[in-house]
Amino acid sequence: MNVRHGGGEDMTQVDFYQLGRDPAAKVVPQLASKVLQAGGRLLVVTRDEGQLADISRGLWADQPLDFLAHGKGGEKHAERQPILLAQDCTAANGARFVLFADGIWREEGLGFERAFLMFDEATLQGARACWRSLDGREKVTRKFWKHEDGHWREGP
Image 1 (tube, rainbow, N blue to C red):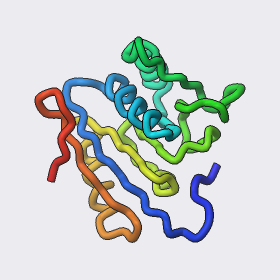
Image 2: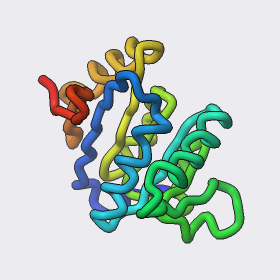
Image 3: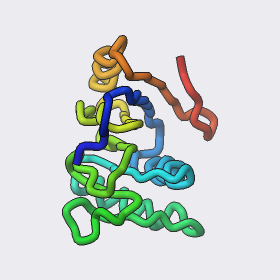
Image 4: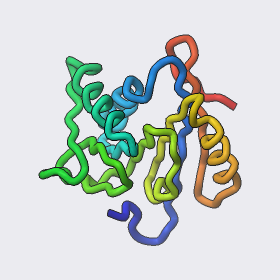
C-alpha cells in the first residue's frame, strides 16, 4: 500500500534511535504507545521472524495496563490493526508511521509521514550511511535520539 497521496508536498521525518542496553523489542512498545496516543497507526518492520515474535510479546507484556493491540501482516483483519508487524513495508493498516526495528533502512520509509530507524552497535555503520544519504534531501528532516539516564534525548 502506498501511503502518500496527492501533490507530493508531504515531508517525512526520519528519527534515528540509538539503542543502548535495551533491545528494540523493549523500545517498540514505548514508541508504539505514543503513536497510538496521537491517533496514528504504526507499521513495524523487521526481516527477523524471531524479533517480530519478541516485539509482539513486548506489546502484550510491557504495557499491562494499556494493552497495545496489534496483528501480523498478511493475516486476517490486518487492515484493522492499529499496530501491524511485518517483514516488508506493506502498510495494510493504512499506517502513516513506520518503524524499522532491525536497523535496516528501506527507501519505502520516505513514503510515510514519519519513519523510525532503530539501530544498535551491529547496525551502526548502516545507520550512519543512511544519515548521510538523507542529508540535504528535499522534504526530509532527520532527528537523532539517544537513551541517556533512563530518558530519550535528542542529540546533535
